[in-house]
Image 1: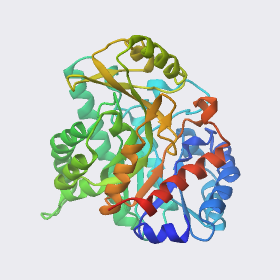
Image 2: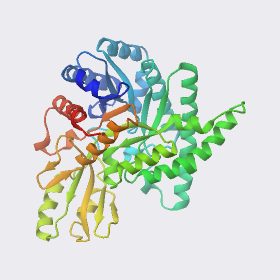
Image 3: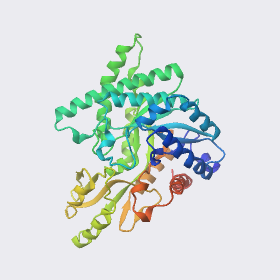
Image 4: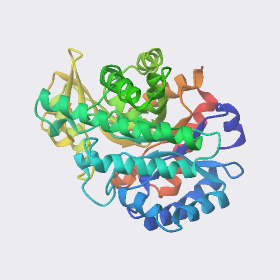
Length: 413
């Protein structure tokens, strides 16, 4: 960011983009993509100051980065390029490009040792990369995918096992802070159809499952009488506030952030992203035309969950865009919000729109009360966008970050 933008942002705030937009599932391939793209992006945005990278590593890359001299070589490259890593995306475990991802983005879920081991590797890597005096965050999946489990008993069992595994990671985070002086938090990311998919579900899980199990778990590990397990959990297990995901659920950002603050839930990271929004006309022939336009976004790689708002102010949830398109002529529905990360710079896509106003609302709230240190642009759908929205990747990233930076100059407090 320019000096002017750094003056506007709180001094401890770090703005970056997530490298999940760069291909390469092996470390060598992904590092090549970073080296190819990041220096030019930094030169355009922030040539004179340290700029952070939001690092996404596949499971394979996380293993390979810890082999041989790879981590030291990356540290040397960061130093040479006046760059750092302060946040990581630990949600997608496996391949994220050039393959069908869909619900597999949640696999393996938090009931598995694979997810635990992967996340602990990310902690080890981030502890090595994180600059002194800076906190680090790792965003992760919302425990599991809701539709893999078929009744309340299964959901309860999965929630319990997943929470216990997250607490194993919390123990590593606490030990890392105590032994290395590196404060790292795990940032749970609610997503439509995740086991935790919205603000109220996150609050319910955090208060009634995580804290209850966590205080007991940590107290059994401590031999002191003044061990504050609740404070430690709140410090190391936080929320990843993906604006796109909260907008899809028609959530009130101001009310939710106030509730989180009152409960003591910390926001580890804001992922700055916008969803596709569609106002559905009453006229059925007009809806048919809208359906043709929406179908351009019906691509096979990622899940595109849809939440519909009815005339009765109720919500209808569709697991993916094809199921919603099959119900396009439901005249009880007024609006759709579609899980498709639309570029931030536009709020109008012809007869379609975006939730850009939600992004502006959250940035406004952040400017008046900086509730996190970490801001990360997460527009990752460049490869699957309609042709008219595509520009070269470097130009796309620069445009997104400049859009965010520019808004800090103009947003009202």
